[in-house]
Image (cartoon, rainbow, N blue to C red; front, side):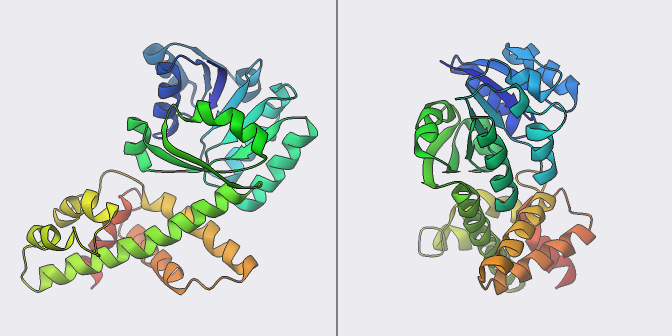
Length: 290
């Protein structure tokens, strides 16, 4: 069992930290809104710290799951950043989906202090975090990854090192590219079925077991047909991720025409007031805008 600090107790971070505590790790949490940290401790035990640096003191591993590049910089290298409280030889594991550029900056900042930095974005959404069934894609040196993997296993069904620093974030970008096109295709298929007068549930029953089947189809088709989008991964978050993807594609020369188009479709959903709707709300855009 390890002494672990967990920074960020949102819809993903709170259950992830909870799994660490349930597995017997000694967990200290930090959240920008202190009341969330206090509530987490009341439910799971452990301790709450007033700053990332205080949470990191004495920790063997520091995990973070915050919002964006700026949030990660703040908890790592801000005035009370965690790296300032970490001892040489410890490991920082970043579960936030951020740019490869900020990952490189934080990796370098950690190295200056003798701290290892593993970029480890996740896939599986809120349900995956709550059920301890996340997929974690990692980048960084092999030795610290090997040390961190048994700790990450508390909330992961699969954890894999993809390469050197930044490889985890790049793999997450591939994940989001694939999801964007898939959800748009599923939305168009279900929308077409509606317009054609077909029973959408019967259609999915037939095609879901064939080549068209996917996790999105199995887990989202019913709520999509029922026009319910108040769960899962929010459109605002997806646009943040796709912004990172498209900026990286500009740098590496990748051509992503469908991803760029779907990003604009999500912008339309935001204009409909759906920034906090689930990403499957692309079908709502088709119903409203055609």
